[in-house]
Amino acid sequence: MSLIKKPIQVVLIASAILMVMVLVGLIGVSFVMEADIHLWVYIVFPLFVGVVALLLFYYFIERFINQEIKAIYRVISKKKNIKINPVKLNENVFQSLSETTAAWAETQQKQIENLEEQANFRREFLGNLAHELKTPVFSIQGYILTLLEGGLEDETVNRDFLIKASRGVDRITSVLDDLDNISRYEFNRFNLKLTKFDIVRLTKEVFDTTQSSAEEKNITLSLFQNYDPIMVSADKGKIGQVLINLISNSISYGIENGHTQIKFSKVSRKQLSVEIIDDGIGIEEEHFNRLFERFYRVEKSRARNLAGSGLGLPIVKHIMEAHQQSITVNSTVGEGSVFTFTLDLA
Ligand SMILES: Nc1ncnc2c1ncn2[C@@H]1O[C@H](COP(=O)(O)OP(=O)(O)OP(=O)(O)O)[C@@H](O)[C@H]1O
Ligand SMILES: [Mg+2]
Image (cartoon, rainbow, N blue to C red; front, side, top):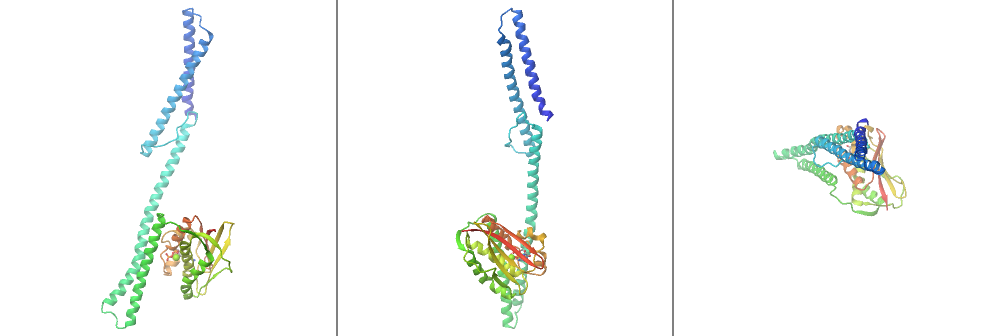
């Protein structure tokens, strides 16, 4: 604060001295020459000179300070063309400079942290990917080798091995499909095809495709109540994918003889919320934020060897973000989970 006042004080004092000097000079000249100099010359001329001097000082000092600030920025950021807001002499230049520098340093720090996070993420991603692909590849290799090494006498066992190998191939294909989807979503290389459709009907269609896996665990898939058609505006194919992922999860992480219910509620005149409610194993709160990261799986799911690669929820999240809608989770271990997403009513 006090520092920046100095140049102003210097300017003012210098202008005052200049004015006095010019005034004294003029009076001196008028005495020596005994000339009749008018009063306005004594006052107006020095004032004029003083004001011009003041403006010049102001201009040069402001320019000087701005150049110095730009030079400082250049040194710290090593960039040539930096746009900074020019400072004014009546501002607290040094405070604003230190504030801007601190803000700049903070953004740099964040960028560094982001890069470190990305590097870690890449390492983790490659590790996970290798693991996801290696597991089915090893089992396929095992089945093929057994068959190659003379095969087995029993035709049905041979066939069983081939079926198992083929399941391994399906697993790899599904991981690759998910990865392909994710990378397209992340680079925004997909266009939503918005249409108006009945979400109740779409949910029933998804029930049909997931029914057989639900039956394996005797899980009942149902709607919370009887609904009339509810028209929404969204990409039907992508919302179908969201429902398949969430309903499949409720089955994979559901208990034997469990239940999955879908509930629709109008949250406003324009928005609908869709809840996928299960009474499965549940998720601890500490995992809620990470569930939507690529390859993230709750340890229990890994330990129980439940099939899955942790790509379903990240895909769901991307689809919801593309629709500018939200997806949230709530869950209690041992009681069940609720995944809720929103949609625009048509
Ligand atoms: N309804 C649920 N109940 C309990 N845990 C769940 C539920 N849905 C998801 N999870 C947990 O979240 C993790 C991530 O789910 P996500 O759908 O992304 O991957 P995944 O089901 O493991 O694999 P996939 O890529 O085949 O979907 C799961 O591994 C599981 O631990
Ligand atoms: Mg899943």
